[in-house]
Length: 389
Picture 1 (tube, rainbow, N blue to C red):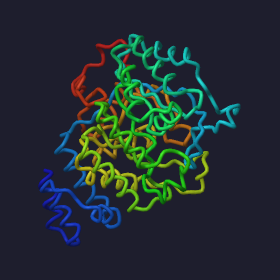
Picture 2 (cartoon, one colour; picture 1 turned 90 degrees about the vertical axis):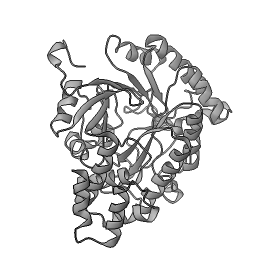
Picture 3 (tube, rainbow, N blue to C red; picture 1 turned 30 degrees about the horizontal axis):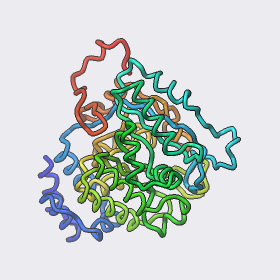
Picture 4 (cartoon, rainbow, N blue to C red; picture 1 turned 60 degrees about the vertical axis):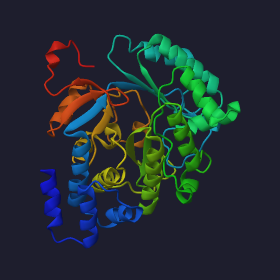
């Protein structure tokens, strides 16, 4: 069916450039930077969907992956002033009603709250707080693992890590090695935003550079710590900035092969310094997922965060290159809701998530953080469970 779909495109009345790209996809050849920009400029939604779905199904069949996870956000107090951020509160505003700073015991109590529940991952990210340094977090991770030795700790954006290492006066490699020795397993993909300095200096000038973000992730990969990668789109960037961003990630993946998944993140304009910028449409969101899937040929997975874009758009994205919709979340993050996401209570039971995937004819697979299959839910009988967590 996939080959037939592409053949229809090749036999249709479209430009030579679009046909050349379709032929490359059919032959599993890499598209160029200029072709990536051209897809954004000239690729219609249906065309992009056919190519992206072809790649998606070639890599992952009809599977849609998710995991049972929860988030811990130690604080939203932050030394950095990102213009697009609705979540953080500057250090000088730490007494604001919207600011929080959890104690170590409060954090560990959150972990204890999942005892006996089949979660496989804890995702720890937050604001960059000067009191919470490298050894504070290293010891915290050690205590998390003492409570749940089996859980995968995915923690700290490159922005947090750059600050931790700088304050501790250690290299990125030394800092990451300390965290790994204390039990950290992988890195999330946050903080990437847009790498190009023309954009980065306007939206998040005071935090780590794009080059530093890439260096931290490459260092983690060398230490055997996989990571994710993100891109914040739909604000002041142009198409060439998106492709430049993806190209740098693609080049790093060629070298390290350490990225698990690529996650395009939609800019939301509620409650931040860029609220005057109109958000991208659902059509543009789907086009962006599709171009991402076509361009990022050496990434095995493309993920859509359902809490950020909403359940309906997440379902639609599964026909435009996406094969992962994150996890159950369990209402344990405020990052999306504070930015005005579609989901104001981001929590789904496993059964709800499975049904959401099946509704669009896809095959739900619970995975661990590095995409090993835990449970095939295609024919799973939830009546055997006392509660679907």
